[in-house]
Length: 341
Ligand SMILES: *Cc1c(COP(=O)(O)O)cnc(C)c1O
Image (cartoon, rainbow, N blue to C red; front, side, top):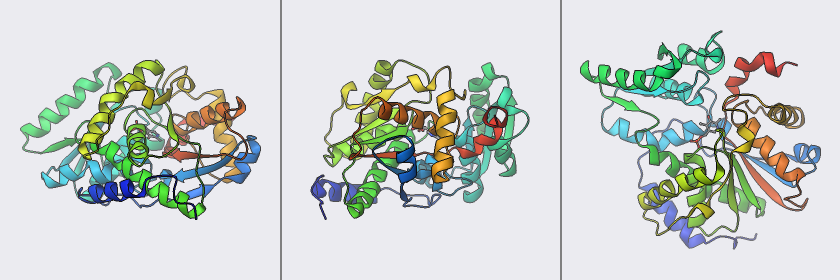
């Protein structure tokens, strides 16, 4: 077995550092690493391995469950009794916040903007209700204010709220540093060195993977397909301080520049949460060759980016690419009109 492509001493040190962090067991880990030979054939690509973080459990899984194993530890430690989240109607994080609160015996409050995907009640939003979250519907432009208001109200009532996006945020990246070690073990067993790791991420997942790969001296990079429209350059600059904070949290002596991050915003166009033609094609080809379900807002677009890069000749057939499936499939049901064509 070739085990020399990364620094095993650095990986062992990182393992010991990570082991000092408290966890909240809300995810099934490790997640599988699946070979996708039929998908690879269909897209004329390199060998494709899929890291199945859609299978983390917790009410249909996803990357937030892995992130929460670390990021909810301060909530438990500090005796918080309400988890609060506010985002789009089909937020996977709201669903996983509601599920984590149920499992931890806490209350959940989710702020949901009234928008086309909030009615009929479907997908993630339906699950928020089933999981017992208090769902507060607000006008989209009031969402931020409504979240702060909910937090203030809860405090006034004697509750201890924890906001699952901002509180303990860097720990969400730390969780994906650990994912790197998990992935390396799996790649060692397959005796393969990939050329890149593709993932759909705005901030924390890509930062964690990037910091983890740098820390162990891996010879390949994370490529992030953003679910949000924006300027690649600006996003890469914004990731720098998060990378530094994540490294510092893990006592790693690493510095970052925008060049350490590879980000593509173009596949999110025309906007976040809008299904694209190539996203739909990606969802279909993955479903029909591997029996794996992607989602309209995140992983379908990320896969469309990977397929585009393959078609542009970025990878040879004898290379290997890892795609991290970050979850999101419950949102499919809120997009039936566009998906069923
Ligand atoms: C939230 C989410 C992401 C992005 O996560 P980051 O924390 O921004 O890295 C990607 N995919 C899915 C399915 C998500 O729900």
